[in-house]
Length: 333
Length: 253
Ligand SMILES: Cc1cc2nc3c(=O)[nH]c(=O)nc-3n(C[C@H](O)[C@H](O)[C@H](O)COP(=O)(O)OP(=O)(O)OC[C@H]3O[C@@H](n4cnc5c(N)ncnc54)[C@H](O)[C@@H]3O)c2cc1C
Ligand SMILES: Nc1ncnc2c1ncn2[C@@H]1O[C@H](COP(=O)(O)O)[C@@H](O)[C@H]1O
Image 1: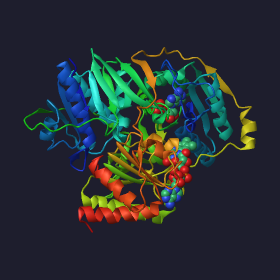
Image 2: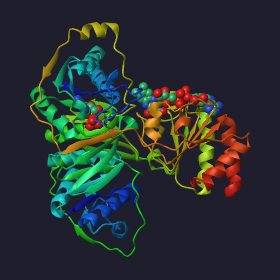
Image 3: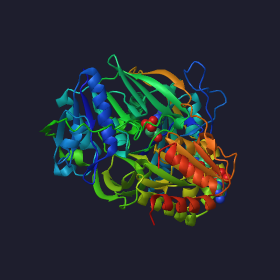
Image 4: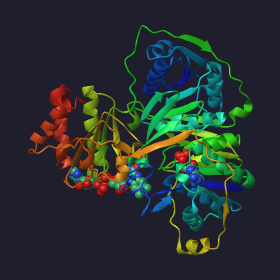
């Protein structure tokens, strides 16, 4: 029997989708092992019970504390430890977001066990986990057996299914008190600057429109933004702007858009690369995308090796034509 | 003030890698190694602090094999004062906990005001070692920093997250993990390279035996993708065809 604790991340009064992916994954393991799923909310804890139940939680633990309204590693790690102990959990599962990657190893350190990060595969068999994880920037995939107790695991966002909500499910909820001292608040949050509304991060996007050296400058990115605008209006998913390192280093666009080894790892349902050659460090960030489109003038560009659909064409012809075509199909301005 | 910089030897990121036929490891003949790119930001930041404050000792520490001396030497050529190699053969198979446990004794013996690291190693994509160390020494951590300002005993940092930016204030001693954007790492100068030859690199043996809780089953190349389609029509028919395929075949639009 594996009781599983899942850390639930919230943002602007919503549960982040990635946490639901972790929750649904936990549900499947618990169903197979006969364990229970505990969802942990810290800071803002109101109004999420139903959703958490529908996606698989049996029990919702809440640490409601003013001082925890912003994420801080040390007190949050303490909250997780307290919840693990209370639940008798032998597994801690969460999404490998910025927050998840900060929190999980700190929790693992409290237990004095090794942990596994950023998995793309997870299976529970005979009381052990078989895990799959990309290594060397996705050039190699490693399969490992994890027998640590507790098993502390972070999942790569957008790889695991969040599944369909089961509205017949319900969960009990419980307030948890965590013994926090001033010492736990040595690090302080001074300011949180959330992304401007409307601007979706590449890690959260369903569709990424990405530009490289081939877009030739900030104006090229303006053109890509017009395409994004049309896709947004068409209502086909959350759309974000991506970039290669060359575009970032040339100062055409902010680093937060960079995809790749020294940028972000993304796995949208659709990744469209415009004027990107497909260097190995770029592929490292986007090769797990479900469908890849490449538009490049050079038929020899390595991006075509990973592309599902390729156009050997000038992007400055393709993008305006796409905009025109999409406007017609979706009847948007 | 004393700053420790943690650095890892990793395969050059531009290389194509092959997996050995038995899946036990990647083929390591003819691989060139570099300092983990994020650790270069940590090195640079330590040097900038030293240039600003003057009285700062900077130490590069790495868990690695004999060959990792080369990466430590590069860090010394960039300007760090001295190096320590925690020598382990096959160190790339160590998990984050084990690596941190192997660093623990050395760090304890050295003492520090600040530890700077990369945000993650690009071979394992773990982002684990710094947090383990932070917990072992009961110090605060601030990850993914793109800005650092030392104000007396407080580090004012900006953290870059996928959800936005955060400003934190962290009292020293602390551990900070560096994200791209923090600085532009310098190249070693000729003078730096000459000086580095005389800088000491101590070699120590780890006292911790690797944990066996994570066992490698096998390594494999990435899952094969079915070969893609090049849409071979004239403009603008090719664009129309692309959109049709995305809607009807791939069903992503
Ligand atoms: C340690 C390290 C880390 C790195 N990390 C990253 C990373 O995180 N992300 C990343 O992207 N790179 C990274 N790189 C850089 C990487 O090696 C490449 O240099 C970079 O990805 C190339 O960017 P690009 O494809 O935009 O430019 P290029 O390689 O110059 O390709 C431009 C492409 O645009 C095409 N093109 C030009 N004009 C047009 C047009 N009008 N229409 C259509 N196509 C056109 C060209 O045919 C060409 O294929 C890293 C490198 C190192 C060493
Ligand atoms: N073998 C090692 N020796 C020294 N420092 C390391 C080692 N492995 C990881 N680190 C440090 O910890 C950071 C995060 O690594 P990782 O947890 O492996 O992703 C790296 O950027 C290094 O600064």
